[in-house]
Image (cartoon, rainbow, N blue to C red; front, side, top):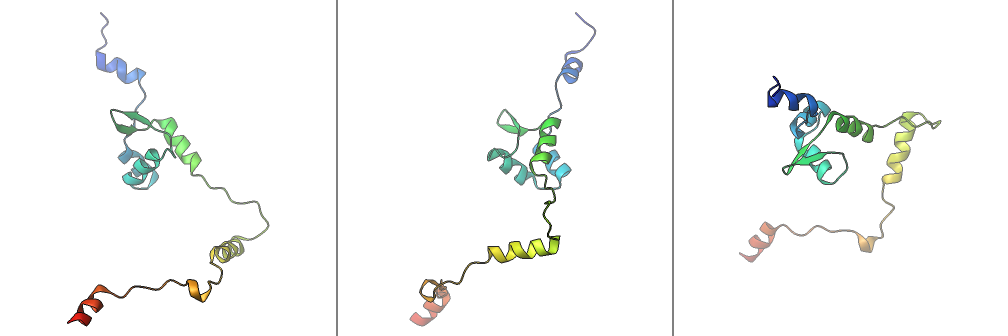
Length: 113
C-alpha cells in the first residue's frame, strides 16, 4: 500500500467541479440563469447525481458562447442602434385589429350593486 491517502490521490487526478452558485458569482449573473441555460442546453455542463456541475473548460466555453464582438460595419454605434430600434417597431395596425383592455373586475362588481 502506498503512503497516499485515498483523498489526496483523487484530489490530484480529478478536475474541480464548480457549482452553479460559483459560476453565477464569477459571471455576475444569477444562479437561476446558470441552471436555466444548462437545462435548455445552451451552455456546457456535467450532470452528476442530478446536479449541474461545471469544469474550468466549461466556464471558458460559456464565456466564448456569450461573447459579442463589435461589427465591422461603417456605421457608428449610435446610428446602428437607432436603425435597429426603428426596425423593431411594429408597422401600423389596422384599427379593427387593435387590442382593447377588458374592464376591471371591480368595475363589473360595482355595476351589479
